[in-house]
Length: 362
Image (cartoon, rainbow, N blue to C red):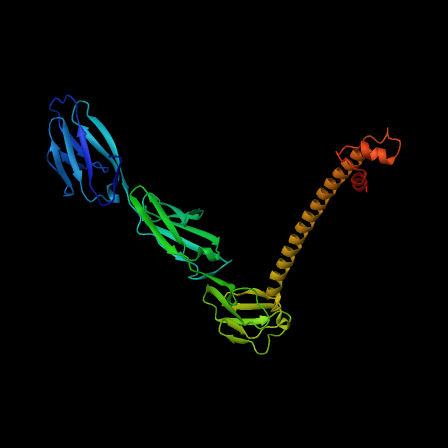
């Protein structure tokens, strides 16, 4: 029985091998007899006989307290007497841990400090810190009290961001007499607004004559108490209408071009988002199809011209080939003829009269 839990039951057993009817007795750390054989001289009803025989004396101790710690003696009356010893250590779990924060609310970028205390344990407890899934390192102090108990405190410091808002911080107690003992506190972090401008109208490019409708979405903790619209380096158009977080401008023209800014602020700070307005000409969307038509027409004309050029080349080669054949036929038999008429008569073609040959020659 090396250790027992505070307030619970411990069992003390004296066993003897080959006992020759010698008397067995159990003594407390003050050498007082608890049991002599099966008789209890000590007036402490928390000790109860569980079993008695020649070979064993077993006793239970209920509601164990710190005063029960120490060395117990099993004594066998022989000559000389024999003794065996066992030490009881009482484990006392700490009370419920207490977690405290230096401030209830902290602003992003600042440091916060948490302290966790485990009171009245034996032995001293150990403390671990977890922020979400992240383990933190704390500074621990241990104080021993007058009744041999221990109070343990641990302090942790860390800087917070807006992502830490609502994240749980756990103080976990490790002790052999306690399980699943922890304290938890959720962080409350204030942060400056996050700002985004959304174009409600128009859906496409803003053009001359269109209306412009911008919405400023701002989220922060605490919620932004002020939202302002301005035009960077210039005044907002005089007929622009600001309604809460919305900016509305009718009948756009190019003089309204510029950077429009939404500024949101709360107790932590301020932030902004920009929208760059560029007003396009109202006819800008009509010119594009005409350019496409011109390109198509130019392509068709080029193809037609290329086809005509190819046809001319083919026809030229054809006529050149046939003209060569004509001159070849005309020359046959001319070398041996005495005159031109005879040459025509001798030429191929099968004509019988001179007039027809002349006509063919011409």
